[in-house]
Length: 122
Image (cartoon, rainbow, N blue to C red; front, side, top):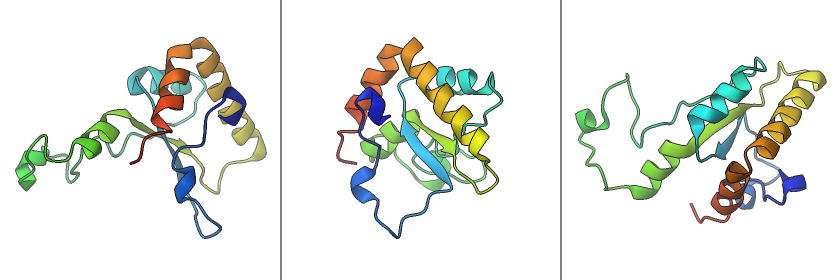
């Protein structure tokens, strides 16, 4: 991401104690992003696609009122998670980085969105 002029998302919240199992990234088109990575056999997660999660129910089932947490709703619409788990080999990491680079080169609109979203105070 830095090679494309992007600040790593959530960078201001990362310190020596931080450990990720997944790398969260806000993208403009999560479905397009996931399809691109899937074509390279890379599993991208979309687990937090609602401001309230649980058992596949609608957030309103838990008393959530749409519009009451606009930042959470925005993030839920745009977040994807790249894998970082301990089973990744160096080759896997290189493939993920190369695939991300290819995706950003093919979709410059996405690059602009990522640059912009990394400046948000979330």
